[in-house]
Length: 520
Image (tube, rainbow, N blue to C red; front, side, top):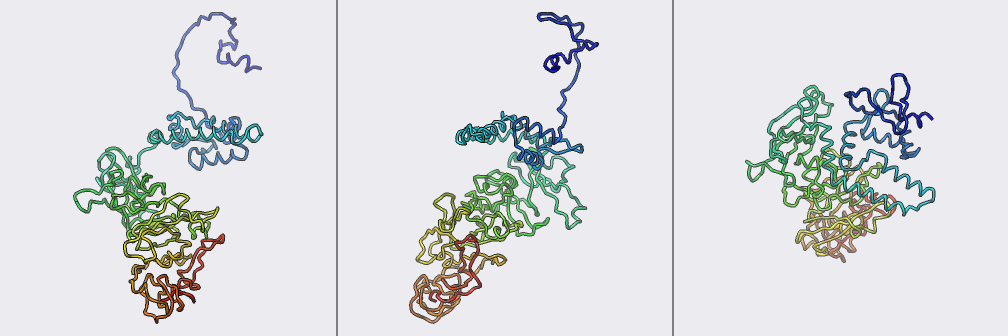
């Protein structure tokens, strides 16, 4: 075999194609010594067929998964194909390899994956059990994850070496306003810039507005802003001082209508918008973080609430269209509400909203088994109960100061506090004049013909009704129920989630209680 015998001598040449005649122990006197300048050459790019062969020889992937692995590196833009259908690494791919290698893990090498798949093959062959291999594999994966998380700054540094900062070159961005706001990293001044587009794109009404960014001329920090007209905020108590984010010290920016955004406006910290703080509500979002999401306790702009990143229940509207929305607790200037995670003030597509009572001083939800509603939850979905802390003197006497209940199945909570579960294409806005606080004389009225509201405590003032027998604080009586009757048939507010598979379907109908409502 030529390779076995002569491979070590292939590069030795005497000019005649003959190998030098040497014996063990021979000494060679070179006739000349020379030094030639050269550079290492990168290996040539490979095709998809060659990559599949390399993966097969390295023992990673199977016939069923190799194609998916190759598709993934292209979808994530780690590599791309040139005109000759050869793979070339992108800047992002190079940055990832450099970053992970600097941590001590050559995750671009097949060793870790090959070891894991070899262990799985041992289980498939019956030589090992699942329990034998799971512990060591998970321990090694956990070690990699913990170290990569602790040294994430090395990955940031690798990305910075391969990418330019946002707004760093005038070719990519045009300065709209110098010294726009204050940088929280170096206390320098940030310039407001605009990337791409220009006057021609702005003339085209169908074109998306160019992205605006903030760029620090001192530390080269670049941050992207959301759509809208930005303006720097000042401290309302001292107009000469900027309003700074207490988390990262960047000057807060107000986003007003403009550039395709038609909402009422909101505030956001440019740093938190791009890098959501996980300790203050940022765990619920991977980006696009705004002040109304924030739970920082002492900031006057923070509108988030404890448990805002906890899924209360799956969104019934999204379920109708095979969506993945989750209903979560939110706090706004108008009070607490439950809203779909696909619902936002900047054009979210799902409009599922449940306004919670204005009588609530605080509403919260926590993760854990103790908050799960056993009646509404099953193996496919989890429904969590909310904790209400009522304002003093604002609720019926049969409510305690604190109440823990499920808005899906707690009829007393829903009806006594006027909580409406919306239906598809019938989402009603909050009645600003509604108030669940009724006077105590109304609470003691006995049953009779009901007026607009047949319950003792309701969200509107009851019309005067004829006295009747029976009735109690909770509205039970012999009189015929009026609108929003407690157990009336077809009342809009009487809808509830059924216990069937379609548990999100509301059984309510148009307004008006049927027979058997509460006393007026």
